[in-house]
Length: 228
Image (cartoon, rainbow, N blue to C red; front, side):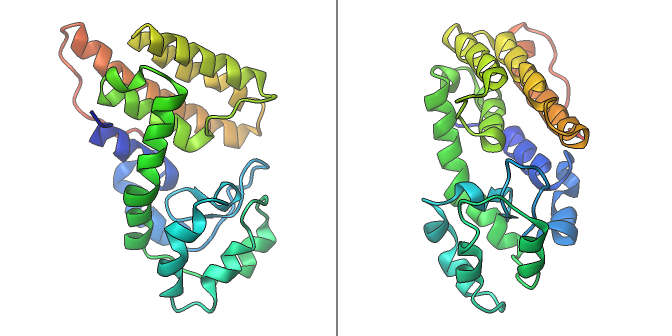
């Protein structure tokens, strides 16, 4: 079993489309072809489909060296390497503004290089999630893609993750959705603008998870809707 296409679309939608899958490609071309910093303390300089250089110490070379070397921008790989493991800044955005990463490269790294590892991270961090259906596994994979698996010194995040682990162990679909929404307490400690977007993403993930509950309950599943 793998995650659903709806889940893959949801991740792309929230990483570069503001929650709207149809807007992802045009918004990427308009806003995200150049390295950018989301503006919060937890993030580093980001490229491609939500590829945060702050957390790419062990993956950046394999994922990007050849693709960046083929770009017109001078020494793109070497220059971006300087931002591995460090927080982002507006100065970093300015210094790398001439680097433009095509959509095809961004989506290839996402689908071929990074997504499989996050799918596996979700399975490992939340045992049992992989047998609960592709929407459930996919919703939790989106959470992991966005927030990672670490909870050290983050009690509100640990509370939400513990709820999801408990629900996964019990094969409790609604409990997984509730756990995703518990993350809002953690996000609300951030600035309001950042928290607003993160909270909407958690709602979209929970809604995706609940499609499985609706189907298992024998009700008519709602047609796919924009997650905007």
